Amino acid sequence: MKQTQGVFFAGYVTIKVSGHHPELFFDLCARKGIMVWSIKKVSKTECTGNIKLKDISDVKALRRKTIYKIAFRNKKGLPFFTNKLLYRKPLIIGLVLSLLFVTYLSNMVWSVNVKGVNSEIQKKIENQLDEYGIQPGALKFNIGSPGEIQQKLLNDIPELLWVGVTEKGTTYHLEGVEKTIVEEGEKLSPRNLVAKKEGVIVEYYISKGQPMIKINDVVKKGDLLVSGELGKSQEEEDKEEDKKGTKKQLVAAEGEIIAKTWYKSNVTIPLETNYEVLTGDNKKKYYLRFGDFMVPVWGFKSPEYKEIQLEASDRSVNFFKWELPISFVKQTIHEKEKVKEKRTKDEAKAAAIKQAKKELQQKLGKDAEITFGKVLQESMESGKVKLTLSFDVLEDIAKSQPIVQGD
Image (cartoon, rainbow, N blue to C red; front, side, top):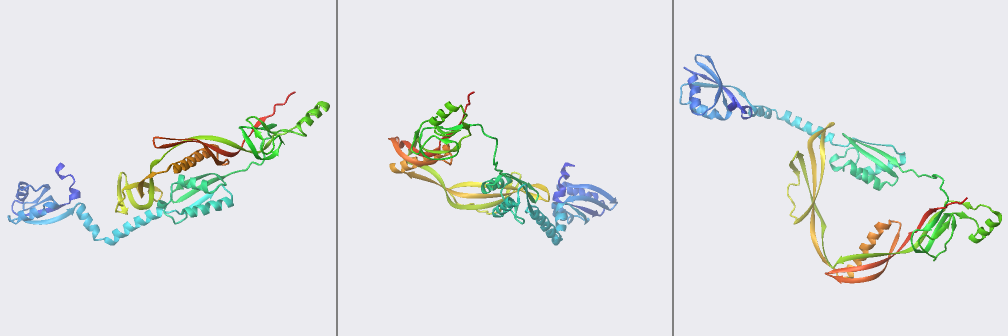
C-alpha cells in the first residue's frame, strides 16, 4: 500500500489486457519493475489493473513483444484534472480574476467615520486625512498603521486632546476628544510670588497682586517679587494697620516675572568625527509574504549601494472581513554613506556652543530664550576641544508661595 501512496499527484490509468491468460502480462510488468495494483480478472481472456502515468511508454514497449492487446480506460490523478481545467481556460481566468478583484476590493478603504468632535474639528480631521491619502478608494497598503495616523493627527491638529483610530475591514473609525479650556477653576488661596533663582529683572506682567520689584532690580532666590497683600506701600499699610487694626486684602498673586539668568555648561567636541548620512537616492521593492516566505512582485533588481538603510512596512491582506495569512510588504532601500569630517578649532567651538545650547533648551523648555554669553574656559586634549560656556537666559523666575495668616 505504501508504494501506491501519492499516485494521485503523479497520475495513473486503468488498463485492460485481452488475450490468453492475460494475468501473465501483469507478471511480465512486475518482472520489468513496472508497478501494477488493483488487478482484477474480468473474464478468462480479460484482466484490468492500474499503472502509473509515467510507466505507460514502458507498458507499450512491453506489449509489442507479446500477443496481448491493451486498452486504456480510466484516467485519474492531478495531471488529468489539470488538463481538464486547461480546456476551460475562460472559466479558470474568470475565477482567478474574480478572486483577485474581491481581494482588491477587500483591501480598499470604503468609508471613514469620524465622531466625538464638533463639526469644525471634524472638518479639519477629514481635510488632514485627505492629505494623508486616507479616503474612499485608497488602498490600505499605502496607508500607515492606525497608531501612525493617530500620532499625525495629534501633531497637526492642536485642538485634539486625544484621537482613537480603528481599522475594521474596509472602514476606518475615528473618535476624538477636544481640548477644553477651563475658564475658572477653584478659588486659589492667598499667595505671593517669589524668585526661584537669582537674576536681573527685565520685564514683568502682573494680573493680580502688588509688585515689589522694578526693572533692572537684582533679585536672589526666595526674594519677594509680587505680594498677595493689596493696598498702599508696605510702610503705609503697616502704620495704618497699627492705628486702625484693619485687615489687609489678600489675593492669589499671578503674573510673569521675566529675568536675565546665567547658566554654565561643560562640553567636549572632537576635531575629527565620523557619521552616516542618507544621499537621498532610494529604491522601492514590493513583496507578498506567506509566513516566512516572501515572493517579489515588483522591484526585482537590488540597487548597487555600498551602504544601505532599510525601511519596511507590512500590511495584512483581507478577503471580505477575514484576514488572510498573506501580507503585502513594502521595502524602501535608502543609500547611505559614511562621512569623515575634520573640523578646525573654531568650527569645533561653534559646534560645541550649538550642542550645549540645544541641551540647555531641552532642559529649560521652549519658553526660555537662550543667548550665548562667553567662553569661560578652553583647552585642547587628545584631539578634542573642551569648553566651559556661559549662557544668558531670559525666563520666568516666579514661583508661588502661600501666605500664612496669623490669628
